[in-house]
Length: 271
Figure: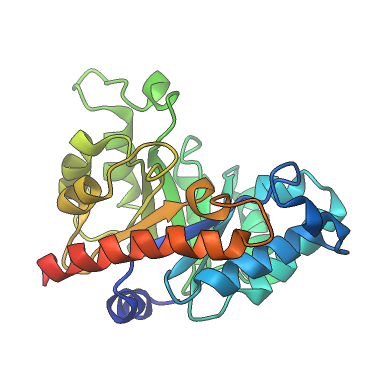
């Protein structure tokens, strides 16, 4: 998917919502366990209920991989079911030496047809650039994450008082294919989103942490939007587990609609 196509979808739907698909067999409604593939059935109903309200879906591959070979099949079916109008993010957090990264890229971009993959930057340039060799595919680099442990390393300054996340943002923009980089920027750091935007003015941010983790959507938008909107705000648990009965998909839609309406209001101010 091209950047222009993604921006057009955001404008058309008045939404920059990404729905995270984290299907946990212990949390999905119990009646779904009667289906041959309960994970896919859960995802299918969530997608059907929310696809007009969001522009992206983000399957977290850990929830599929934990199920062994059948989980991989569920992931394939889920990615195939997501409409091609939507940005498909494989939240796999990969990253290794060049040859290995290239194989990860082939797995998610060619075999599974994802549009983007989340990548850990710790091993540097030659672990990231192989993912950027694939035309019209995107790398979403972990920069400033929403979890508490982000403070362990990401805020650590070097001798020039530049935090590690700042180094990730600055150096990665020199990589070959950097125009197809996005960055994970957690909503739980609202005071830093403006600074991050100044360091990466033209890149999209994937923003987790709104909803169950307590991030504030308005603060994220105020600090993080650029001329192309430049944000994909993810909500996972707050949407997919809004209900746990037979009407779970309707409850998921209600939650997604609430976020989409907030986003539409924020976009109208921007315009």
